Length: 516
Ligand code: XMP
Image 1 (tube, rainbow, N blue to C red):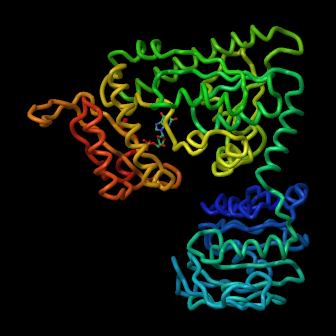
Image 2 (cartoon, helix red, strand yellow):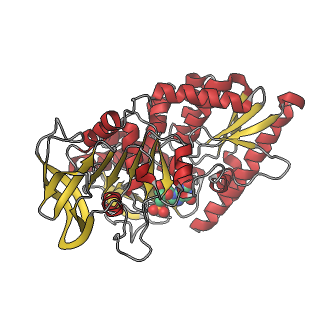
């Protein structure tokens, strides 16, 4: 294990991911965690993350007391580097020369971290304070105009620090720096591979579930599919998957679950066709939040009923259904404060708070994984690529992409238009660069068009391609004109009811990604 000590910057998760890309397992811990607790995790190395503070600010987070005396190889990055320098008797000061963004650095190749790398290179900086004097016993191994000590090391004590951010892609050789630290300075071995993750999880799931029965709700999304596939690999027929088809998925997605998922995993699947029920419940409703509430409520009811049936079919005794699979990911765990079970509050929302007489223990095989790792595990388990690489899609589905009342006819129209947009974005090789591309049907708007000799009076759709890191902020994606032209031509030609295609060029904020 490599511990990434979080000083409160958005970079800790990125560092943890980069470490795992070196095939070394990493975990994020708060900077307030006592060193004894860290040592109990048997870390091979520690990385101190960047942070928003100045080491001189009131209440600035400190290095965990005694960390540098433990002998565990430690790399300080940015704020973590300054904390290390200050704690060990170096000098950190406001040089008046802040550096933000791409910076040229001169590195010493006589260094455990930088040997084999070019002496001059471009790195990503983001700092106001700078280390002006390294602590005794440290060699200065990097300099920039704004940072007299931009890197330092004391290999005898296993201590290293860099002012720049090796974890961001703009740092040309950042990944090599991390590899040198992990493999050479800390002696880590690249054992965190997809094959090992699958094997380890399978073992753990078996140990947790034993001979009991387990249920998994599939949504059509990546997380529930991979979680279900892992559990299937571990306990086979003890698992029953439940798929509530609410009729609000995109073209081909229900089939992916019903056919491809089952073919790839051999899982037992109970499909509940609830399309009528959802349509009836949504009849006449136009308000977005009301749509969401109705869908959430109906979903719980249908899933609950299906779960009862699975439980009843399983009978009592050792065979009883005691476990429920959840696709909770590592970022959810970190954001809800780490610790065992802390993500339950959030995951409960997903299944929608099942009633008391349906108490399940959660099985969360993805709790340690980032999204990109989940996708790789999915590939390793042989799930279809369309499922594994599916872009984020809202739980309420197409219902919140029809501005106006949701009807079967409107869903069918939107499904066709959406399928064309997805197909063309994939064909253009853009589907993995674009975060999502909602296609929105303005069902209550009509516009005049002309087709052949005839006048048409159809509906517009809006294309909403966005780029984003985390859906919190987004920008409209600059999709090439010719791709947009193809999508527009095809939709207006192939979907009779649509006679106009428009493009949404609003960032988030102020716009949200979805229209409702
Ligand atoms: P907005 O529209 O708020 O969307 O910018 C941010 C991200 O969340 C997704 N989204 C939802 N996901 N239930 C969900 O599970 C919802 O009600 C919901 N609304 C929006 C949206 O697709 C985007 O990825």
